[in-house]
Image (tube, rainbow, N blue to C red):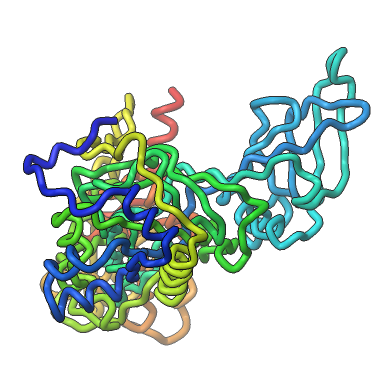
Length: 510
């Protein structure tokens, strides 16, 4: 990692040593991130630079890239664990004989999404008994092939929270352009831009208060789940070029508080771990004073369309945290509700708690041995096989009908063309519904005449630029065999069926 190259040398207002001496003397001036913004509104960033020594931050949200290293000690006779489960959640054992890493998103093999690694970590911190089950292949020095017992956190030699990626500098907001509800790691997103969700805690977000990373780096002491922890490296997916920096954090799980470490389930997505984290920002120079003074109407993030199942999701618009915190924002000409995925109440509590620790002389600042990189870029996965999109497989143009066409007319189309799905469109070609050959068979003899009487109006659709895997998942999820392919205006561009996907798989196998 390289130190930041800011380009301008600023006068040092105070040093780490001077601040720590003030902590010892009991006259350090500490404000939370919200308090310092209020001071800046009243007196300007110059007052912040002059009057404040430390600003405390906080965040409390689902940090999927979290986990814990555990050492169980040796059994008698000893075992070299090849596979291990904690409350039926498998942990990684490809290291030493009785060490394992349990990840927050690993699911229980018996309870599925109801329980996972994040819940195991919380249960350990709460002092609960955990069932340990392990198997091995057996060696001369580790003859045992299986073991089953129970443990608590006190039975472990080491229990270390080790999170590869936490505390995004800023994170996107999410909405959904599809005509169906979707479930994502950004929560439940309603159809047709029906709501917005967002993560992060605005002015309280730790890395947002020092976007140039002048005070944050390897060795920075932090608040981590109710204990003192450390930043040990830049986090995975660290992307400061786009303002998406992250940190890798570590701390003693045995010292942590379950109030700030909560296992969770995100509906239809999986398990995770809510982690309470706070970083103290020393006001070393005027630039840091200015960055901690930025208000929520000055912090902007992208609102992305999660209805598009691609890595590069389209930006719907740019929003500020002030707008998001208002509870409603405008999307595509209509006002929609907004809900946070992070807890502002808990983030505020963490910033306040860290402030009290510093004021009472229980927490001292540490100067990083190396600052976070400011020029790292996040690269996508290298793929040697080209992604197949819906437009590469779909049938085009799709045969369509109008709602006032007769059922007999549709039956004739099915018989002549040997397919099973007929999109119903208006005069402009916009999708109104769909009729299948089964619908026609059921309708015959009922006295119904028009397609509008039997068509399904709530239609699951696909888009041309969706990966074929996304279309296949929709077919499986909804137990259907065909998807009309529409554009952003709802115009029918084609149709893709389970038969089309089966043919593609057949070509790949050959």
